[in-house]
Image 1 (cartoon, rainbow, N blue to C red):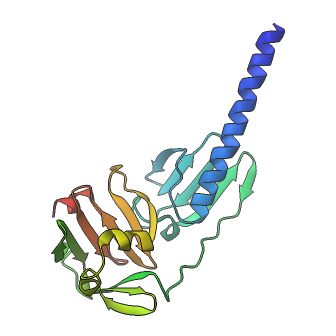
Image 2 (image 1 turned 30 degrees about the horizontal axis):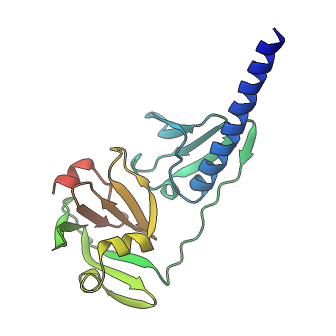
Length: 203
């Protein structure tokens, strides 16, 4: 009996240690606008509330447009570790360097438009009239940037926020600009008007 109690106590201790460790990682990710890793996701359509349930924590947000929107674009953020509510404040994104920007059209046809095809990648703009980069205090058109750089370099300079709900498409942000990199090398770039759908990867 004593051995059984000791074994149960060890298991409980391990659960708490793993729970605190994973909660710490996911809290750091969440407050930096990234999707938690060690959790089960659920969505309540009526309340527009998306919940991330970890071992010892629960995080939630109110969706404004789509469950695939960037964490920081949602509202009413909560992160509770057991009975303790942890503060959530998102870091301000520097706009002077390391930036990908778009100029959005006032009228949008809701379909991505081919911007450039390069290195076996098709890059589309969504409701954009212009796509520019701003690195090392030098602004240039994305097309010009890609003459001397690669998309891989660009991805390394902007914020990776996680995977889309398909588990394959990578999501990146730079200020109000969003970039989605599909598994078939299709890339979708847009601003606030862009609500990504998996079908866009087939453009």
